[in-house]
Length: 555
Image (cartoon, rainbow, N blue to C red; front, side, top):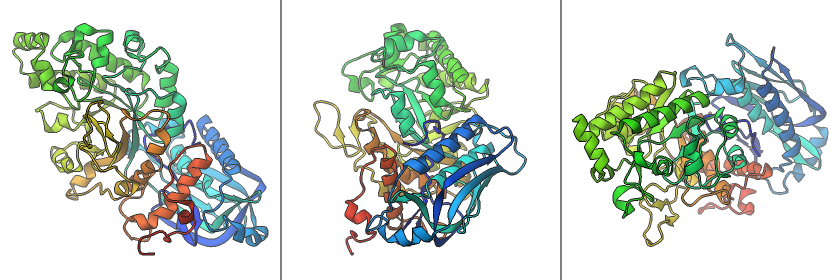
């Protein structure tokens, strides 16, 4: 299983392997050189942290890396699973030490502090050298977060054959490996079905955690305990303050408003329009219907109070206020909303503008940067904070329109990056989840890892507009997902996006990313997931995994 304390704002899986003479890294670094010599791990091997006043989470990361090296017990994905290495292993030098050190003038901070810093201030680059002669390996970085990145890479170098741990392609040098995009994430919807904290911590190496929606309100907020007390499925299906602090030390958060707030009606029925209205399809994207009364001063007060409380407990600099799938019919049919609009002399759009300004102002006053859904940029004339970041989720074709308005963008487009889509009524390739409809999904087909891997973050953008793309994420909406199928739905497909947003458009050789080259490396990543207790789905029969290219149609 991956580190439970590495819930960072991005996905990073660094798996360095050697398959049939091909260097395999996931994601591939921007600059590397590797030899062809085997290197044993000495029984006396240790990781030395040469960092003054080293933060505790760096020390913990070192301990976890050491544990993984000892316990992964992954055999190479070659015919014989490493048997042909036996003689070379016996003669190979032994590595006894890896030394970690910081360079540069940045103050030493914890990994968790570095991970939630502003995107433009974050430093994740690292350099790693592993000699072939058994002399000490070195890992240097400007920050503890960079050390963590490199430590993750180092920890995945190793295979095991007959109780000997060894690497297969040294000497290895990685110079200043740095991500192409500062934001690399995974979004898990925890409203439609509840996920225990253990599942979240196991699954997320990078995630944006969605906590609230129309189905349930599992998030405990101290200033409004009635929301989860009444809105959670059960008393056991809530995230406590301790849970929140454990997870959100490394994550961005979303509380969707004013739509997808039907669960508020359990505790504040007077503040929710069209609550549980029928037919729900007229008033909402999915059942049960219900939207916060955005024209109501009391509704605005509740929303700003929630975000004020959230800002105090979520350490991330970024909080999403949602804004997707606003249903005008709900407000048109709601007598209280219409009365409020008439009394204030506002249109619905003007009331929405007032609501959004209030929620964004609550965040910006305390130093948070608001994230909103693309509809708030494209469909309404709103006054948005200058540093607002928009999530483009409906279609990758919408990206140019958003950046033309000058907003930074997080890419989460449904046509490439939705792992399972339940927006509206359907799953991508999973069929309808409403009980009386057998139609196919509007978002078909199922997004394979190859489809995700083919995504071009800069498609149809000018060179100047590309500067507004801060990164991207895969997303899992969970109408048809729960802890029973979480791992195989997510992994290893989400890892495909990791390379797109870490490595960029080209491999170190200068060749474009392509799925044929990537498949053997992704196989290795998937097998390592399984060794660590993550139930990642198989990509091919093992016969194919051991023989790269042998199962291609033209083989």
